[in-house]
Amino acid sequence: MTSTCVVVMGVSGAGKSTVADLLGQRLEWTVAEADEFHPESNVEKMASGVPLTDSDRLPWLSAMRDWITRHSADETNTIVTCSALKRSYRDHLRDTPALVRFLCLSGTSDVIGSRLGERSGHFMPASLLDSQLSAFEPLLPDENGVTVDVTRPPEEITRTAVTALGLDARTAAC
Image (cartoon, rainbow, N blue to C red):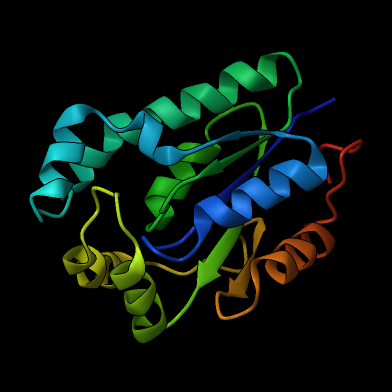
């Protein structure tokens, strides 16, 4: 049996953590937060308002990919949050024995910007939203995933993802 990893992706403030937690509860899958994989240098850079470069992101993406791979070795289904802004980043995450699928949370800069303005206690400042939106490459038809509008309630996004991706707690690969 092949394990599955759902990457809940989108720009900062899209609701990745909320939706990943709901998916994890519904499916009874292991959940990880992408922020846990950032080297301290990345956190400091973002906290000071400096966007990350591709080379900054590579160790972070590799750490997540390695986490997915470790869990796939014991056939554990997983969910991880990750901006996964570019196709090349998603390709890097897919380089694992697990079946990696994507739930892309998409919304306008106004909607996401207002969410970021209400958020407190996070190192990622709202000032970096524009850099994330400009780097964002939507899922392509050949990528295994679904895109959902973030203006929908998190519970509805979760139901849509489970249905569209054909997921349940018992069946990993779909």
